[in-house]
Length: 419
Image 1 (cartoon, rainbow, N blue to C red):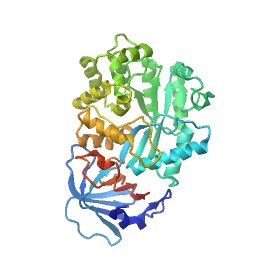
Image 2: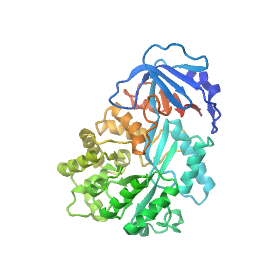
Image 3: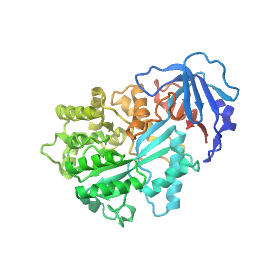
Image 4: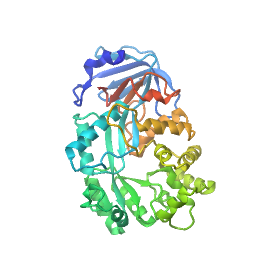
């Protein structure tokens, strides 16, 4: 435990129980990295009260309340809490729920330990995820805030899966894994998904462009977000973008736009890719400019792609950033259960090393962009009125993202976390 943590250890949230009463914390003399890449980092102070950032000051402080806990952060750096915008916590073996929850609890604790204060789960067993979410909200389990999706696909997709998920009993017929055959299916399916607590609908596979648009429009009508894969098969990436989805996952999928024809067959498309499908710059730029025009976020999952020989993902993401497409950091990767480095850091490093983002742009992708793609306007920036989900780092993340690997302090909703 560092000297800074010892100083405040008596105020903290210990274990998995929120025990701290509302109080006032002042973090002074830190370099503040706002979360917006256009805001220059400056040395200042952050005042936290009742779980929110009350003020951010760059002037000398006067009249600090005697009830305020003052923490000197000289030489340290403050950023918003991080967000992984593409995780899967509810897709493993759930036959033994006690075992499944034990594993998920360990993963969630490690996410928070590494400064990840919010996650977007991109489809899994909704009752399981709802229980995970509730435990965190009630302070019974250390972990990030959890927002999750229902997965919609054509019946052919679920038939292909057979009995491989949730025992296969109701595959495609649950609120969270839903087979969509016609427009008539859409409205009631989204209503059921909403009742299951989802924040968005993940539009996944085996859907026509007409059904993609219907799902997206109805999700928005019912106050939900629409998140999609880059290619839905047989629908092409441009069909997805033109439906006004809020985000498109897997930058590598966008390469399938250049395949000739109005639709694409999944097996033939992937066969072409692994034979060395060369990226067409014109088709790529048309696709990305459509996303930019509609404000569609790109969830590129570059780390996932690099581990699966999908070299186009980094190239497409680099160009997306050059054209001004909004990027979020998602991993779609396995998280460790113990205190080990997390794949989000690998994703962030690749966005710099292979995709040309600046460190400030990467931090924005992992903070405010991740919040906005999930429909959250209350976090992701170090500003007055925002939730006090903050990290204190021992070294400058603009020089090395390794500063995020072991935050000196994690603050979630104004409570300092100790492990």
